[in-house]
Image 1 (cartoon, rainbow, N blue to C red):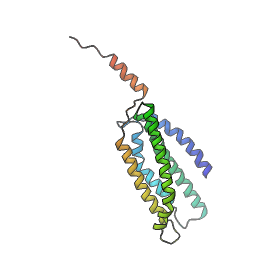
Image 2: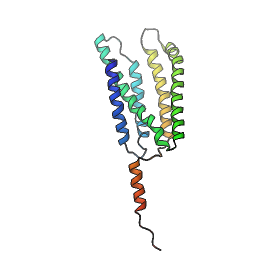
Image 3: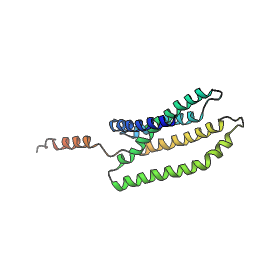
Image 4: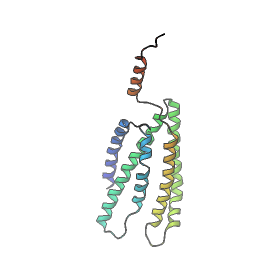
Length: 182
């Protein structure tokens, strides 16, 4: 299952890069994907931890295989554009480096916080029936926080860097304008 998932993820990463390159909306190339994947990412995150009880081994493995691959697909649809966003915000290499550094530091800081809080939160919300209630509630809370962060990212960024092809066309159009008379 995990081998298939990693291969599937590697292929979808490449495909998503291609899709982002060809996305052209009034919001840009990457920003729309950050917005469009908020709800699917939330749902996929919760489904990974909402394994139905009482299924046999085969159906449980099938559920996990399908859901984890959906999660990785949605994660790719969200993360590739999110990672690309820094290159579309500024042409300045220093600014791009700083944005990437902040993104990576944030990633590691959040991972540290989650490693200390997740099991504690699961324990708080666990109903004691040997189920996954604690995990589901914890993931719902994480999903809400993640959704707010991604909405903030979408709302507070502007793609300023235009693709070279579009920029060259705009420059040509500017040069080909007729000179004003008089």
